[in-house]
Length: 282
Image (cartoon, rainbow, N blue to C red; front, side):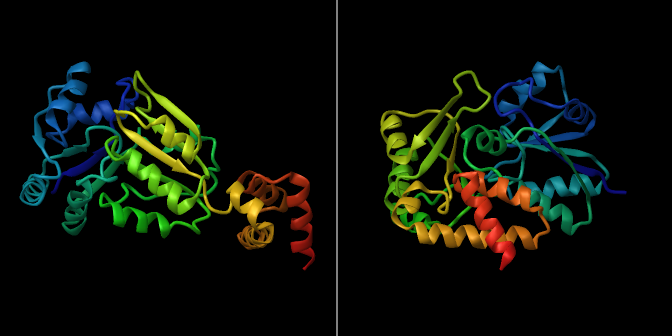
């Protein structure tokens, strides 16, 4: 009988941000497949865990993934961990998971920390609907084209970015999406955690110097942008009507639909409520 692959989320900064289940699994499995064994060893040492490890990272996938699958087929249990957060998100873990699915190997998720959710929550931007899109392209022209493709995205946009490319990314956002609201969350849960909230131009000025650490960028969606409200109120009214219709068709109550649209569009409740009544009447 084959073993089990445990996808174990580990702290993104503060070592206390780990679940009791994760600690038990890391102690009980036969092998830990770690993105960087040096990083994971610090966590294991902190909790006096001595489970054997093997490296599994971007440059070792392929044959290494097959070797881990062979261990699982032989009946061993393996915990997959990344340097920080939940494995499989913007890292090579998805390849190993795919191979295990193909071999009908049991997979269990041990949920826990991820940088995405804390960043969205503290950003102050609408959280009812958001998209996560990993890392933007590295090449300047591809980056500009990428952000241009998001110009009409109405949901809050969440991205990872390297501190070395943050400045160019902010420039591209400003050029293609305009000076909308943004939050840049740096080193979340760590000693030097920083949450910047403001406009894109203000963020570009704030982070003009040398930047360090892990970064999550949270960008306001198109419909909620103040620039759109000022320049084309009719477009916003049409978008509000479409959103209210969408929510009504989903079965949500009128009260909840109004509350949600007030948050998403940042409009007075009386305005949204009047439009909701008009939509219901039509």
